[in-house]
Image 1 (spheres, rainbow, N blue to C red):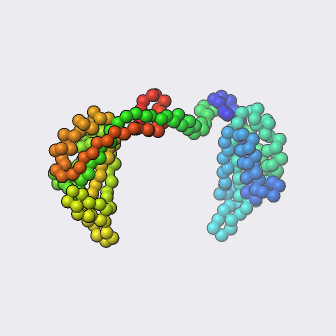
Image 2: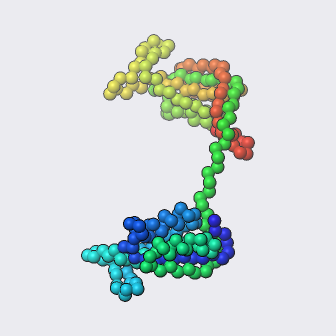
Image 3: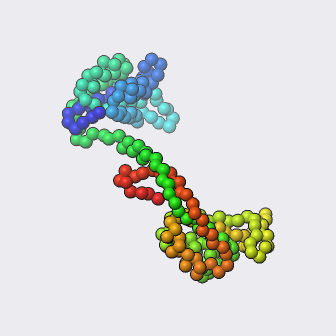
Length: 238
């Protein structure tokens, strides 16, 4: 791991066509650096250049040369460089290795490790379950009644509500309502369920009395078993 202070910058120059044990030399060197724990390395490909043989090489649409210059750069501590240098010299073959003294002002940082999941906790207790049955076509101030009830529950800070749309059934009028293919019936029943404390649900009942002109409201005792992750601060999350 690199720290602020003195370090060594290594540049390895070779041609794209250079090989090491049957593989591209630059790829072999990159693998070597990775598995030997070098902090990071970059491979750069030149678009034109010449080497010790003084042959000019350039990439073009007509002729793609395999002798284009390649450069591998990395920065490490001098101790690490001394450890790797003999093997790098062998892998670079006829290429050139340059070592420069440099100063690290700010070392690279790996992505922040994910925090371990919060402990799983089980919360149990007593509460009330409210079920409200209304018709899909019922309205409240030019808005579908079930949507208006959800809005009202949210405004009264109830724990949460789920709306179910019935596909078959009958009510007090004993008319059977059934959802049929290619037919959108507006007489289907809607059921809203919400679980909260008895105190909060009973305080919401006057709102239900005002909004529901025809329907059914049922209150039941329930046992709550809730699985949740406890926050590190100890605060509860919904």
